[in-house]
Image (spheres, one colour):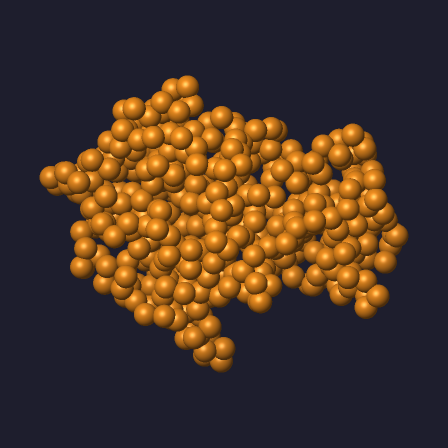
Length: 444
């Protein structure tokens, strides 16, 4: 598993290649200096006397790693003095091709439920802290904050036994309340977040003893990654849960986790699913959305808007059609990236039991540590957009049925339930966080 130092990465260009532009090279040099500085700080921290309470937490995590890898019959947790009875009334056990390793995921999930503890810093006042939007594409900021604040299971009031520490700020709320659209001073993010980190690092020992590597933030705003740059330890070493999981914008899958972008109905903090069986889906492919968002959508519109009755691409859905009904009656739902890599259409397609067609670059898909996206979606390269219809027609009926059945299976992991339920999107986000903490060795 990665060492503390290996979580620090430098700036790289598209698909991992070194960037060539002068601006990118200058930015890379700047970031490399910060990495070098942090590495020196890490070495100095390791010379100091170890924190006994943190050593106990690290020892517990070490035992958990062994149990997850070894299996121990799936449920032998005697070394942890915990019960392994699965409390799920439906007795759900992860299985099938939608998972990379269903048995390992199951063991990890059960251990997370038994062990994982999160401390939420209480400093900060709403609306910038402890609350967030629960509608629009930023919904997951508010949903997660609300569930985390009121979680009697994972949240602990004792920071000495916590595995991770939550910084409960909302990037969306900071920008909504403080960002001036005329002055456009983006540094407002730095002032608010920087002051907050300074406050908690001054009042508590937990940030400084790990350089923030066991701390996390969550954001679905486009500027979520940018917001963390103002505190370099937050940027380089802390865990970032981001919808905008773009590897070309410094997203680091070794320590950061991708979460789904979900646009909720403003009246209900839940999601609704359902759609027609494969045999009754009359449209081959469907997409509706702004055609000038980003670089991928203009290509999609260029090749397919008003070009083919089987591939229906709209900037606005005609008045005689319903967006959600179109998704429920289409075989494939096109999910091209817009201005940012994430798209709420992926979750919407899964809810509508429509096979998602992923068209993106540099995007780390949500929960991809656990889920095998190739089992329930289709990936199309940007260069393959002109051949989109041929690619989709080349998928046999048998394979399509398997894909759609898997979409139905994976739904539970993207549902927003109120209250939250086991294996739903909130718990999958928690599991992604749990995995990142397992991969961190503060005392290695």
